[in-house]
Image: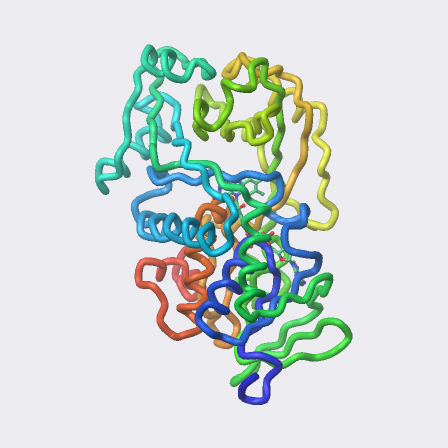
Amino acid sequence: MSGGWDADVAVVGVGTAGSMALWQLAAAGVDAVGFEAYAPGHDGGAAGGETRLYRMAYAEGGRWLGPLRRALDGWRQLERETGAALLTQCGGLSIGHPDEDYVRSVLAMAAEHDVPVEVLDEAEAARRFPQHTLLPGEVAVLDPQAGVLRSDAAVIAAAARAEELGAKVLRHCPVEDIRPHDDHVTVVAAGRTWHFGDVVLCAGSWSGRFLPSDLGARVRPQRVLLSWFAARDPAAFAPARFPVFVRESGGVHLYGTPSVDGVTVKVAGAAVSHVVDDPNALQRRHSPGEVRRMADAVGRFLPDLHPDPVRVDAFTDLYADDGVPMLGRVPGAQRLIAATAFSGRGFKLAPTIGAEVANVVRGDPSPDLAFCAPSEFEVRP
Ligand SMILES: Cc1cc2nc3c(=O)[nH]c(=O)nc-3n(C[C@H](O)[C@H](O)[C@H](O)COP(=O)(O)OP(=O)(O)OC[C@H]3O[C@@H](n4cnc5c(N)ncnc54)[C@H](O)[C@@H]3O)c2cc1C
């Protein structure tokens, strides 16, 4: 403890961003406490559903390349420090027509930044990845560095490593209020008021109420649906044979991961995400229409899966209006650091996010993440 505070830094929310932030803060020797409403790895946050996609050839653009490369190193470091197996680089396929936006953006990013990819035409894709049905003229772009992440295991590993390095994690300890002052921040939780030098807001879908109103008005939780399908031949969907994939085909968006349980394959996207007012009132079951849309897409594009899902679930993530995350000190509340609004893309970047929180606390933010600074929200339309 320094400056008379309970700790130098509090991290509010020990989910994806919070667990990594706590790990990196503890590794940097910062006295840090994490408050988590449930416990790290719980299935109500944005990391639920076991797996997430990691990609290097990224349609979202070259500005993410540096953060993605650092994340890859970070995943390997977390694996070394904890012994957990978190990232399987089974490769990733981007499928679609090369004249349409999605595949065109992936190819442009890869060409511009020398990211290695292999373009498979319809016949070659059918030979190597017969699990997918391509439409006439479509291609599959293979990104060999892409892979599948074990999401809940990663949150548990990062939080446990943070504790090993000296951080405290307060489980089942929801924060009720955060009040920034000029030289410290107070937090109300567990029936008392706590004092910290800095507070890092990592509350995911629940962050909006703790942000100043101008920033809070620009973020919204969205419901994202996941479905699992039984494979006719599970071996054909193992990571060694079935890369992660994202496809945009004739107006249908679909993404998925290889089987990690040897039975089912996770596929998502065709049943669209939408804004929810209250993440605590999330509808986790899918409507009959949502199930039908996923079954139709799977029947059409992945014929070796039984098209009726064996499991469905839904999770929320916090989306910014323009899709750019908020990572940095909050204007007008300089002791409050936002690490939130990852807008459906935060998991692959999680170790970079954690490291960036530690950089911001030290006063040394990364220039290539300056576009995520909350102050930038004021200048973006
Ligand atoms: C279904 C789905 C699929 C996705 N697929 C991908 C993918 O393939 N690849 C990818 O890169 N990204 C993907 N994403 C996005 C990524 O998972 C998220 O951007 C990321 O997990 C968000 O992390 P977070 O830390 O902001 O939120 P969370 O992980 O939800 O963490 C927030 C934590 O804060 C806690 N909390 C909330 N309020 C309080 C409070 N008052 N006090 C204490 N604790 C509190 C919550 O309990 C939670 O543990 C996906 C997201 C979803 C929902």
